[in-house]
Amino acid sequence: MLKIAFLPGDGIGPEVIRAAVQVLDAAAGKFGFSYTSEWFDLGAERYLRTGETMPDKEFARLRDEFDCILLGAFGDPRVPTNIHAKDILLGLRQRLDLYVNLRPVKLVDARLCPLKDVGPSQLDMAIVRENTESLYVGIGGSFKPGTDDEVAQNVMIATRKGCDRLLKYAFELARARRGKLVLCDKANAIESAHGLWRKALKDMAPHYPDVKATTLYADVAAMRMVTHPHEFDVVVGDNMIGDILSDLAAALVGGLGLAPSASTHPGRTALYEPVHGSAPDIVGTGKANPLAAILSLGMLLRDFDYPAAADAIEEACARAVIAKAVTPDLGGTLTTDGVAAWIVAGL
Ligand code: ATP
Image (cartoon, rainbow, N blue to C red; front, side, top):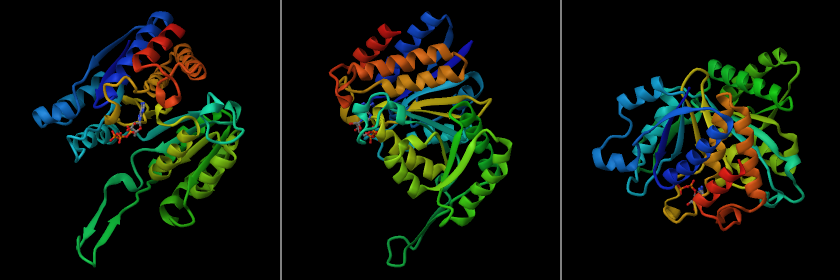
């Protein structure tokens, strides 16, 4: 039986996770599966109360006792250092070695696309971002800070193992989609680290003759995503390039309120979360759009072999967008719970 940990977190996190759980319960009833779950009290409230962020005991339970985690958001103005978010979110990604960050980007309604004359059939891609390396490993520091001679340095890491395992995932995904993969990098400027990515791609491509694998400089990719979005199927990038391109792509299909994500490593507890943050400005107003969290739930169910439930959830979300049965950020008038109820009824 599927074992899910709910980590609602801060701000609008609990609101969107509650909405997603209503949809999960409806899907379980309709498609005849069951699951066990537990809610974890991790986040700013707990940190302010006890000083704890991610205790080892709870991390070990998440690692050993659950198939997956459905997470809301972390971030709270009362914790300006964001230490709890770093420990919980980055801690889970790093300690579970969740090297794949998958962000599907699919346009469901032309009204949400800021590009002219682009409809759903022209914008359907999957961004596969390396999630554990690159510039985000925290290696570096400052020398003579606060002086005119200040020097600041951050080190970019690329490992052959890291490139190979992510590319393998991306090739398999491309094979299951439209058979196109593009590696986006800055190999012209970052010759060693991004050169390694190109070498790994060149070595792996012959094993996937059915996938058309190409490379693009990331700056060119950013332009072509705007001018020729239909060219993109599976887009691969290191942690930094994937971070930037995935936000650009999300803006093409409706923005943060519609962007789901999965962070995975086969065989380990997988993490599903909406891309948006805790949005403290709209907490408690009913304006939090739950669709990104609900679509993250859809990704979870697809990965754990409930494709019919995942399809139904995805389709119900698309119908909600088209019918404007959405929150104000997408041009609707419903509340968070109203959207959840609409999706549940749609199932
Ligand atoms: P954090 O510090 O946790 O990243 P943030 O508010 O700085 O939070 P986001 O929450 O990612 O960053 O997004 C910025 C703004 O976008 C929010 O202040 C909010 O107004 C809007 N927003 C984000 N997510 C949603 C959502 N699910 N529904 C509606 N509006 C949203």
